[in-house]
Image (cartoon, rainbow, N blue to C red; front, side, top):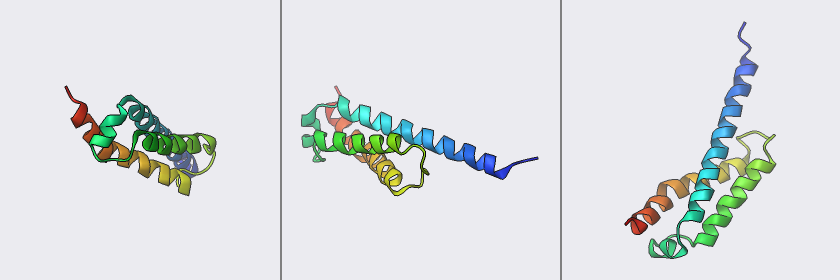
Length: 97
């Protein structure tokens, strides 16, 4: 017999792991680009993005037992997605050789 609560638990676990993976990728990627590239792309500075993404990742890891729909998790996920969709392509385009 199908237990709907078990399915919900597995879905939430998958969402948590995906959110952690996205935040780790965004944080590590933000560390790799030079600080001048952020300034040249007219984006927030490198320390600002590293700080935002670092706090988002730390909150995700510290509050791992809470729901992935927690306000802190959602704000951190939105910040990571904004970085990956807007900042990363702009910085990557400027530093491409």
